[in-house]
Length: 408
Image (cartoon, rainbow, N blue to C red; front, side, top):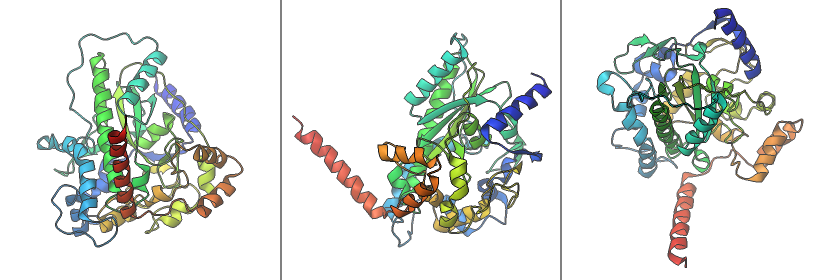
């Protein structure tokens, strides 16, 4: 495909996905991600950021005297992160943090014999089935798009940049979304709520690695990726998983913004999904719950704009941009990840309940003002005490044992 054809295809895809790419667009350098800057940028680095990272891996000696910050809360959070952390650090001697700074290399070689997977649609159907079997909550497929790949990679450990790793010969991208636990997210901000994040990443790593290896076993190239390599949200939007929200997160019709994303790049011929629309943009235009709920005012109040706050924002895209410096500063001060914007988002619901599914549909209509009023009136988004979560977890465990013990 020639350059002109690629540009034409991208323009068509952008319109369908709702992207507004400007003439001054520039690919994002991973070095400028606010989490990467916390390792090298003196304006971000501090004693608080050092402690923030340390408490995820080192034995905790002190805990905040506040609900959700007990030793037990931290213990669960760090246990939830454990699998993801082990995979991230397995090749640290090679200056790699796999899954967060670098793509995964934890795979066996590609099979010598390539299996005929039928039509592209048949192959896509099977890949989605397998992804769901491996634990994905959602899965979609789109094309490789160089614009969303990092212009350069960055190593946290050696503080050096290097070229991007993913070749454009892997022209299909499988995007998986892993849901985070609804009840844990309700306790945000707390160390306990960080368990939802850790579990999301640990489960995501399992899904991505397993799916990647399955494709390699079929005789096709595949590379697994999580919070590395590229900007995941544009790929997820193109793959039909959801829409972009005011808080800078992907909003899905099944889990709202309560998800973590992973990707698998492959040369396996696959049919692509189309972007979806279910009223998120129109709802976010009238809703300010994340803006009002953010303690450090990192989320914009106005319409989508090309304006940026600092180097941690991508340039040349008209959208809602979040001030990553303010956001991460609050994380470090809290000594755990925040996610208040997820908790208060009206799309953050348990969609296994039919009433919430109905509300989702109505939010995409002219009744969106009423649905926003109702969301506030009914108290959705209010913080739940971590102690209540522990009580609920204990009651569920007791009920499970009672069912086993008393069954006939």
